[in-house]
Amino acid sequence: AHKFLFRWAPIMAMAPALIVAAIIPFVAPLCWGEMTEKVGLGGACANPVNLQIAQLDVGLLFYFAISSLAVYGATLAGWASHNKWAMMGGLRATSQMMSYEVTMGMAVLGSFLVYGSLEPGAIADQQTNIINFGHFHSSWGIFLQPFGFILFLTAAIAETKRTPFDIPEGEPEIIGYFVEYSGLRFGMFFLGEFLEIVVSSAIMITIFFGGWHMGATVDGFLAHVPNIWIFPKSLLFSLLTLIVWSIKVFVFCGFQLMIRWSLPRFRSDQLMRLGWQRLLPISICNVVATALVVLAVQAW
Figure 1 (tube, rainbow, N blue to C red):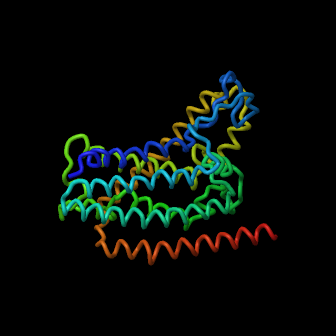
Figure 2: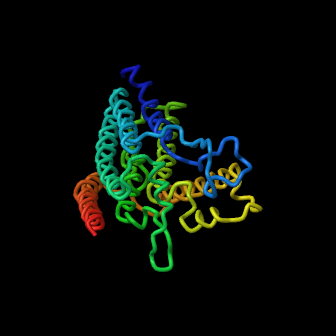
Figure 3: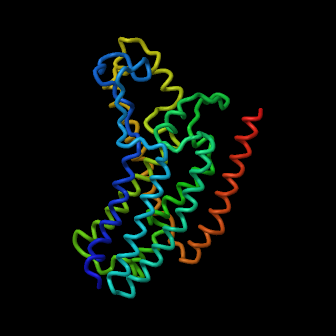
């Protein structure tokens, strides 16, 4: 076994999930010095403090660039263990993670065409503009990119190796890439997986469900309530948006965990066929269709 790489693999499996969390906007901007005023959505803010660790113009590209490094965790764990079973698990994990990252990228590309930005905070802010759907008012990405959301959700579940895509672990076959690990290093692999679930859920609600925003109708209502109401106060409004964001993330995390009880595991060939021959062509068609619609709207 390779001692250094064997110890380094759990870090490579967990660290990317922590790093990419920096680009996620999780609370409304805090109006520093005006926390008791009617600001936020209801008025101007002189010194807004964006509660987002890193505002990058290429935020979503940063997400894919860093999260793809988690592949090295599974690869190094399987190879450095000097165990044939671990090596097989590492190969299966690597092929699965790399395959479904392609679909995830194509699914997000449709949202980029719609919103014209790769910065998660800007995408979430644009989803507050009201678009009429009969009696329903919203511009959440789920209504503008429904196929993109389904593709991203499916690929995210496969990327985090949850059932029915948990082939890399393969407990009945005893060929998980971490078969030689124990103690805290063993726990770091699973901690990395659960962190990826949280981060992927946060990315999903940012792109497709308005992030910390409560919907165009609710946001518009809170922007015009009288001063005697408590919600427009900057600090309390930020706390309210934090609660809304947390509930959204919790719902998606719970959904990804609960499907474990209801779906059987794919075979390895079925998994790869689904990724390359089903999801990838559909994601390409979604990008082409979105581009045509955007061009038609701009021309009209």
